[in-house]
Amino acid sequence: MRSALLILPIACAVITLTACSSFSSMTSSDKIDYKKSGDVRGPNLALPPDLVTAQADRRFVVQDGQATMSEYNQAIKKTSQIRSNVLTGIPGMKIERDGNRRWLVVDKPAAELYPQVKDFWQENGFLLVIDSPSTGIMETDWAENRAKIPQDIVRRTLGRVLDTVYDSGERDKYRTRLEVQKPDLTEIYITHKGAIETPVKDNSGAMISTQWTVRPTDPELEAIFLTRLMERLGMTQEQAKAQVAATTTAPKTPRAKLVEEGATTRIEMSSSFDRAWRDVGLALDRSNFTVEDRDRSRGIYFVRYVNPKELGDSRGWFGRTFGKSNDADKKAKLYRVVVQARGENQVVVLVQDTDGKPENTATGNQLLTTLDRQLIK
Image 1: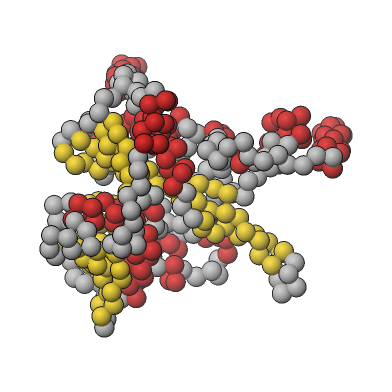
Image 2 (image 1 turned 180 degrees about the vertical axis):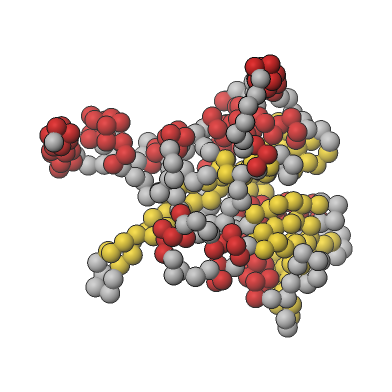
């Protein structure tokens, strides 16, 4: 009863202040604040559903058991040694760009960069759901950019008291991939995925519920985090921003097209193998794929993919997302996305099953169609 009496004045104040104020606009498009995502305890019921992700690498999950103090101290010492290299500064960093795609090139081995990039995401308020040093891939959990919530007079007055009342209706997640070009040369790709909460209306036009849907990838958010990562690796803020601003956009030329011949489907690309390999990797990162491994020498990405058409909606949003079993995880299968050079400037992209045989099925065609949407046209 006492709690209710305390809440009532606050609620009245909110109503009064809201009635005589309007939401302020965002101060800048690059203002981001995901810090609160790290404060979540237990299942986060605000996460968008229906997007397949792998579980975090089990090698990094703390198991129950006992450890001696000496073993504990050794572990702490080892961790400290790794983190001591974080802010020493890394020479030989630059941003490269192709269309709206940017990536970071660093003159350092991927094995040295991986723990620093991992720390970077955690320091920015993200939890990692994929953490795979062996493949150089990590992916964050869904998080809300709190900076997108307008700072009106209510929030400025009451501060964090009513922070949980406001929601931007958007969620973001980021995938990072470290690609080894040479033993001491690493490319770092950051790709964004977004979701937005949209209303569901009945036949009369009245809203009856909401649902999460995919929203377009935001290249500017990717650029912002690349800039921040450069700062984290030792570059000054001014230098990092200048690097991103200095990169020019190459003119767009048609490079990919989907070709269907009878029961077979393929993607043809007017590109060198190196460029096609990079473009396909970025397209996979931005699509609903889980890259488990890759073999550049053979031109193969090993991916898990589930055709959305194979998922039923009978369990509903809550059941699909937080049930004991996940239909998407069960139906996701392993495929090979093969990038083959067919000449000096010609490449084809094919889909094969786990045995290396052509995947001439509806799912194989859907996989290529999904991939084709993300490739530069």
